[in-house]
Image (cartoon, helix red, strand yellow):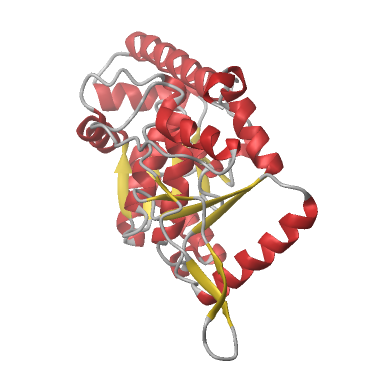
Length: 317
């Protein structure tokens, strides 16, 4: 996928730069108004989304759009998306206060004192937004790939610079985000969003199962808590046959998550057994390349337990 994240200081008209760039490149333009509408449609008007959760909500929506479009995403803090989408071209538009005040005077039809006061308020709001999402009041230069000066260039000239970067990086030649990659992203985002109490509307069925290992019960508790539908050992995949064509070895993944079309295998055993299981998983991927499989090793599983607080719920294990 090709994603250009355009942000800027208030009063720099970076929204105009993003709009022209999307038109010239033939990319889909996604601005803050459109994102707000999509969030409202999916999570409701009264979602009460915390600022720290908003980047994940945006990433979830963009991941869905990225399966069908290349995109220009325009918003303050848009560069933060590079955490979820490596390879994002991060563009930032900046200018001295005098230029920004002049733009606000023209765009908002204000006199200079009113424009100066508005700029102070907009800058303060942007600093608060950065602080809540990144822990810093201002963006650092290395968060961006291309910083454009609105004092020395107009919007058309800045778009030419963006087009040059797109050509140099070969962004237009990239394919759209695959369905499997989108499902992986959505799964990780769902876990993070649920920590803020944000879950999709509607309930999921929480099956009552007996598990072969306590770690499987813990993982099922995690999925239940985050309202992720699951099936336990739903399918057996043959991976080896004898000379007469009879199945001699098979593999049964621990969980299937239908919403993400994702099989999950937990591996919390000693190394000698892990090696044998890894061989089976390698055969599974060779024989069934269309399957979307994610493996959680011992260290991965321990990280889940401590990160999501499951170690404090021994009764569930």
